[in-house]
Length: 242
Image (cartoon, rainbow, N blue to C red; front, side, top):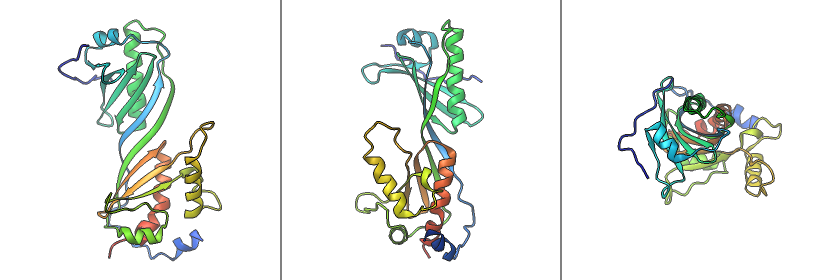
């Protein structure tokens, strides 16, 4: 199958008591979310001949023995990011690499517009859905991971296997009246035994490093990332290395 040698870009446009008792030392810089990857999907509403797609777009990568979709890069200037689109023969679209949700959605719309210009008049963007937003945060101070395990007991930390401490939090339950670490942990465990008849609940996984760098993954919205970061922030501050 044809593999283009150059991949150009498409340039188209008790918990409350705990928190109150913390002596909060504000970091020199605020904890800011830096999103680096949005994974999303949608449907084009049409079947797509991928051989035709490769010939018509001219800047695609398609090797069916490796992956059953054609890949094309779309540049999103506003976010200064490159969205990699996977196009399947059944019309499904998958986007990765966008720095914002808007970058992923706009890139899909650009792809649909080009399909229409090439004669696929029934193409349209359907069922756009965000599956995973990945971000990094700098706490602004080093973190004592063993102390973090004491302050927030539901931490997965095995330094001999992984230098980062993992915390899983379901953002939908943070505002519940009975919310505390144990409550959130039970909700997280319950999601692992979901029988598949319902949409799996959203779980944000934080990977906290000694340096203060924190990776976040699993969110379906920016709001979820903000909620989780604001919830865990007092525990991070209390675990600050002094």
